[in-house]
Image 1 (tube, one colour):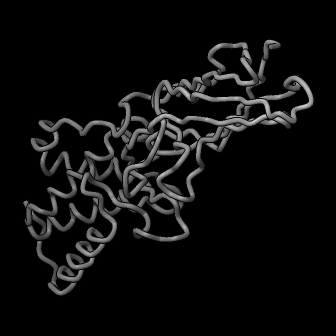
Image 2 (cartoon, rainbow, N blue to C red; image 1 turned 180 degrees about the horizontal axis):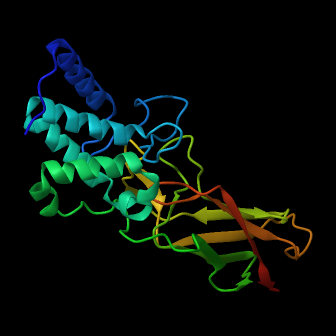
Length: 268
């Protein structure tokens, strides 16, 4: 049963107007709301805040607002939007519901208002893997172990095994402010180094406005190491490859990391 109408209908009209305006500017079609407007030059990702701190989460409060409007007006569109938003947060609610009190309260209200519409709807699929992130985000190695030069040229592969639930940006990220994955040679003056990066995946994440160019799973970098005619001698013993990357899940990113891969070379 709907609540009584407010004494001053203009306030209800204003509430409806501003809720629609917020939805137009911040909402995702799949559900939930970004914390910022689109196309802000000082941000490289848009996030959907869910956790309650000193200030309640905006997403939690917005769903309460939608339920309020449904109870005050009886308009089914408000309830439809609230349920869509709740379903988009199925995974974080299951994993970290204790930190999402506002959202938990909105879920309880929705269960009271429309229990049949929640019970018979399966949650949408996870945006990436549908599994919890593994303990190790990435391991890297030189495939052959020992590098062999033939006529001053060595070709070999570097393998990356990216943990379940993680991805890393490709060597050419979709956004200028994202950290690219780069493989470089250090400690080897007199040598040229080239990398053939594989074709990246284009994947969608809740914090990005458009698909991102990423590497996932098992990845192979084919490389070529060439001795210049001016090289004074064999490859130095302290020569190494540096792999720089940033591992992310579908909701957050770890700090950038660098892996050092020493080069073991057979004399030619």
